[in-house]
Image (cartoon, rainbow, N blue to C red; front, side, top):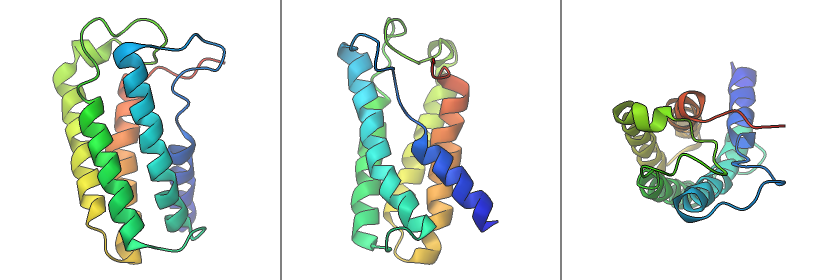
Length: 150
């Protein structure tokens, strides 16, 4: 079980790369949401390291990082206006055609990030990180994000 948890968390933490290095830089809401997702990832990775035991548990860091993640998720939920589905983006058209489902997953991710901010002990950390990573990040990425182009 611990190995499966670590494998899933590693996949979630390493997922990302919103756009390719060879593409032209995105602008406007696309660039803003890509930066928000990068910020989410950079704050999520230390939490995964804590779960794996590669970094000591620190409740203050968990709280700070989870609050940043929640804020970035709230901001990014508003960065998918009509017309921002073309260009340097991995956003699928389903974000706009299934907007209620997309918003529901975003709301779940925000709730899970807020819950993660309340973690006060190491034994609470893995389930909270898994909930955010699975019910939030992974659920959204699987349905609403195009695969990375090689």
